[in-house]
Image 1 (cartoon, rainbow, N blue to C red):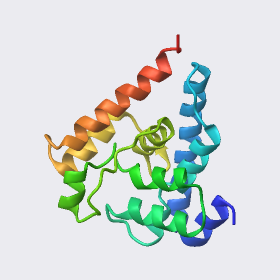
Image 2: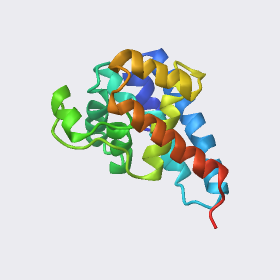
Image 3: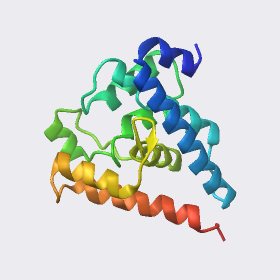
Image 4: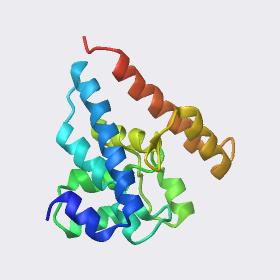
Length: 170
């Protein structure tokens, strides 16, 4: 079964529309970064964006990333897609935070460029609309508090992606 068919079968329409918006934006970001001379698997970025929230078919809690990874593994998708789903929330979740949240005790921080691009694109899409980083930071501060480490990680990821968008590889 292809990614969009599975997404449509398992998820509500609003989740599907959000995933399509994230996939489109992630692809645009990935293409710009690749055009600057960095290696980016655009197909992985496109599919990762499309499938990142498949776990929302079962839960809308913080756990949806982990659940999404399990669903993708169950359907035989590439492990790299499962890791995108697992690591996309905010700019990732540390092992310490995962334990506090009741998740399996491990790091859920995006590692690969493709994981980072999808997490960043997801942050900058609210529903199906593109938003700026200030909107995202305000949202996370309201949810988690001004000094939560997630806010700093989101800003750091934003800076990293923007640097790749602005600077051609030498």
